[in-house]
Image (cartoon, rainbow, N blue to C red; front, side, top):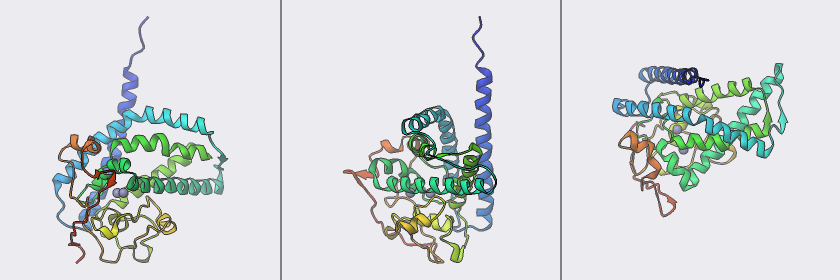
Length: 288
Ligand SMILES: [Zn+2]
Ligand SMILES: [Zn+2]
């Protein structure tokens, strides 16, 4: 007897990876076109953008490799806690209501986890890679440590399955909304939303979250809807010309792809168990 060939399986996974890469490249190319036309800050380095793109390539590959692990852990969490406490409607206007409920639930979980990332030193060690980007643009969107993907996939997102029994296509639709929102929020785009600035996460609102200025620290955690920042008192409404310098306040950033992949191992960022955020008093050069 012959063992079954691994090639169809490999081809299947190769196809999934390829689609993911094409999607990311398309989103970044579209974002870059907008940034060229209406930049918030001029003169961003190509080297920094290429670094983020290369890292995104590794991040995608690792995420795809680790999906079986996160899927198995997710099922275990749902089984342990009991899945689908509330069954959501999937027809007509009921489906629209279900979509809104799932978006709100995921967004609240994202908000809560993001606050933990800034509060717990061990999570900040991972999340600070995202904040170490000195130049804020669409290529920063996937500059997250790959262990963040594992933690969220294993522990955070399964909670939605614990709460709700919902058709997969509704969850898929919410994924698209969060993906588009995430790319939009990281654009180096002078989008002036005026009085609607706190209705949805956007380039200026999220730029404040990445700011090096101490007064901006621990504000604007929202992933999609700033309503959570309103409710939990972490809202900073950007002034019209407030486009601050971004990055870590100590200026630290990875020097190589290996440095990014192994970022939490470094002795930086957290000392004596305290999240270190030294003010360096950089001026808001762009806000002129
Ligand atoms: Zn953050
Ligand atoms: Zn960000």
